[in-house]
Image (cartoon, rainbow, N blue to C red; front, top):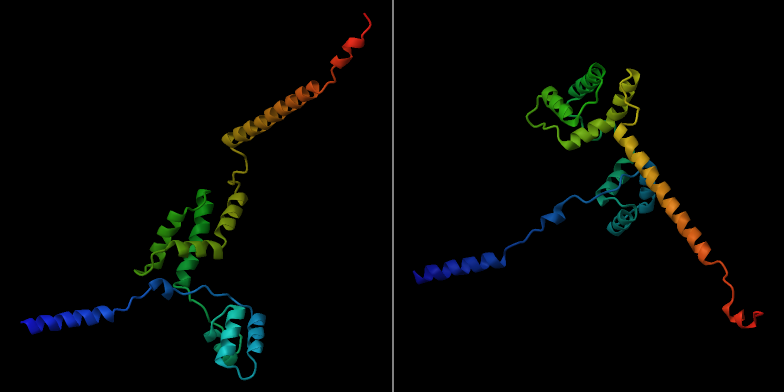
Length: 211
């Protein structure tokens, strides 16, 4: 029994000594620069004809890209192949979504909210893995210029409110009045200072005044 306890203690001690602590923050993908074709060509030229690992490392740090990218550009060229990049999950559903947005704005005369857009996207995509995240909505709105499109539609049907609200007008008038009051007070202070600077008769000369 004693031998078994000693063996268990030894095993625990070995496990403690061999424990590897992993810092998961270091495993995150680092930010990388998106280089143009001209910059990629320059990077390949900087490598030279027969680059060594140190050359790859030096150029990688200089241009701000990975050694893997440099090796690929050197072997396969810097031209981006057609079809590269992330594919759209459902192009047909995206087309339906943008058509729905345009039709909805024309019918209601109002802009589409993010929540409405998300619900309709979930309805059209019909994919359990698709959650219509904030990232998807941001990208969708930006790529199809939804804000600009909705503004143009509302303007074309005369539903765009270009008038300033009464509350906004009141705020503007209040601000102007405050600025005018501040200028008036400042002017009065300057006038008072000028009056105080008026030259008074020299009291030292009073002894020589004629009786």
